[in-house]
Length: 378
View 1 (cartoon, rainbow, N blue to C red):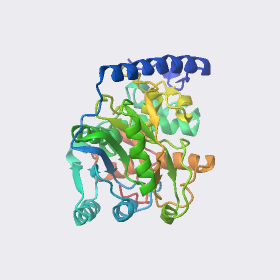
View 2 (view 1 turned 180 degrees about the vertical axis):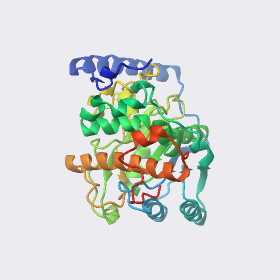
View 3 (view 1 turned 135 degrees about the vertical axis):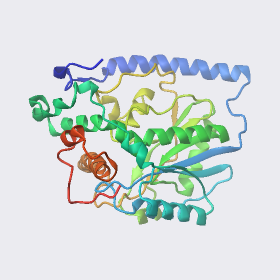
């Protein structure tokens, strides 16, 4: 049932600090009890699968201006050349709906040259053309012409535009769909699966620390991998970097876990943060409210607080855009707004290339982005 128009701009606040502490204490007790039961029964959740670890990277389209053009290919070459390999650690890649056939061919050529395993989730123009808009929560497209929408803060306007556009974003960018594909593959072949963002790269020391952390916590369903961003890939070879949970971390899933990323959340709208929030991992995402037009929880999360933070972290290579790769609040805000702008510009570009000829919803929702002379080359 759609929310009344006057409720669309309201959000659900995060739980209080005292309530969070009480929930955390309850789940910590439950975790200790579960771990004790495992040990008393003599059963270990490990069962010696084909590989001990799977690092599965998801390669998608470059979204200008958030990403530099060609940054996915450049960083893939860097990872293949410099990231170490360890026994029992399997590397795979997912080509996630790459629109440009030439760009996809270059990625495939690089993977084949290095004898890397990969799979394709293909982009199909006919499938994209059939996808509509999500307007139920707004009462129809006319909401985007109302005073309520015009008076909303710019950041809220963008959130609403993103949600109205979300069916197209889910198909084209498919971030949680691809992550879940990675989990499905990894759980069948490995004890631990890491569905990594495309630009993530480990040093030898950090990868060894990650492996040790997983082996030290065989009864934990999730391992949290701190991350650090670098603006210049040459910093990969310099002094050891400071890894933290300021940035959204990467997540390792044990094969016995059944949880997945919620595919209702498209790229740019808490796609990973929603999972971190359900896991109750401390971080800024705990304080991000749920907007009235966003979905409720699908079901209770059984594994709250059941994670270990890895002693090894991962480096997020340069996105190819100057000044957006440090942890300063200003850079984070610029990245956030730049990403949202690039998403809407990309969808507008896709609509011009692959959308239906006449679409009144598109012309209203994306009125600020349609028929721009600036190419975004999804």
